[in-house]
Image 1: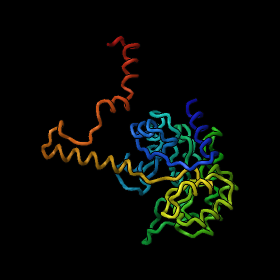
Image 2: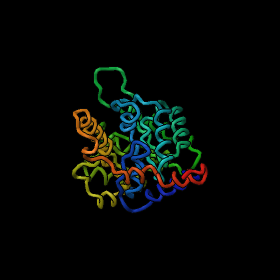
Image 3: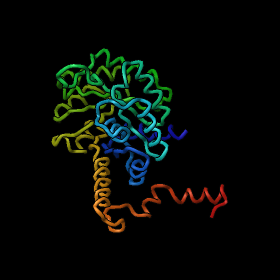
Length: 288
């Protein structure tokens, strides 16, 4: 099955020695662009999903079915191993099991489950809070139990570095590793010494959700077993700006022929696989 091959490729990257940057994707066309440009992995983030599907901020308002459907559309369109941000698994440990089932069937290569208390609970603070450690471990175990294809990568994600400090980060890293996750995803790490402490504490591939100026060194990251380092989700923001500028120019009277930054007909044909569709039309519909 096509998903199996992608999962093998994803695992090969995690087992390698290099740190790579994934392509941030949001839909079938962006995934094809990333694949055609040679990105080894695509990343579909929860924040991007909220923007692409709901046109709203990242407040965990998107549903599992909406997220899984968009992940499937991306997976269907491009031969690109896809890592997805499954947030908190859309509920408790049993919801996590359903999340893994749906995303595995959607064709993703890997998914992250995080230990932040989501969605935001009632109260005036608004500051992020971690779920208790035993609840976080239970979610990881549930995710692993729900997996049917052993090739699917289950990633334990924690924001403890930004919320509770390095000691709590190390405790959660060790606990999730002991639970059996395939890799660990950290948000909020800023210091080399903290990354080195994590790498010395657990023997798993590491994924970073962001890199501070101090950590912006792929050779160093690779030496600390960081295999994937996100760079943000600028492609979606760039696309929003391009659509805004184009519509604004048209509204203000610019002629379509005078617009700037519009994809060429050749690029559009390449990304929509126009030649293949033409071949199928001739073969199966008798068209010219």
